Image (tube, rainbow, N blue to C red):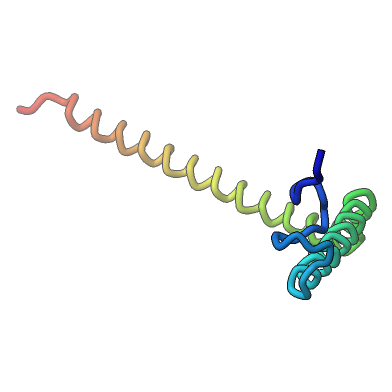
Length: 100
């Protein structure tokens, strides 16, 4: 049984056992990319396990600002609902009185 090109990992289409310079360069770049992704994965795992003080402080500040905005939004909605109820009561009283 002969060896096909697909079963030989470094065989080229012309049947030679060597890679062209372009193919070797592409493989080298893929190897660099794989190494960089491994480094990035390691760094991200460390950051996730031990977040820095700066990140935690920034997140606390963001949480305070978000809470303030949420509180102001709730107060605004409550104010609008209250005004609509007052306005609705005034309209109801005006229509409920008999005209003479």
